[in-house]
Image (cartoon, rainbow, N blue to C red; front, side, top):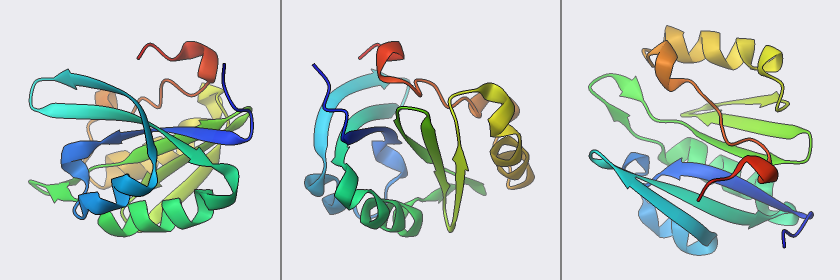
Length: 124
């Protein structure tokens, strides 16, 4: 059962500079592929602003391309790049600004997929 007051998020472990910030989150699941580990995290609603600031400051750039993370709860989707955050919804039409920004900083379009973005769509 999910805590509706909690946000879930997807973070690439290798994309975080200071990984000690992950200790302040609940790791709900992991998925490993190629050279990356996706972490599904849980964050209390009262801590989400602090976590977003910490993630913004700690996301790395590899070969000129930044990592990003996203967090979601209900109809809210928060997409975090280094130094920049976007508010959206689970509806893909609301992702346009974040996708445009991601492409402008070198993230390939195929990698700008903010799923899962609803608890019911989680697979790990």
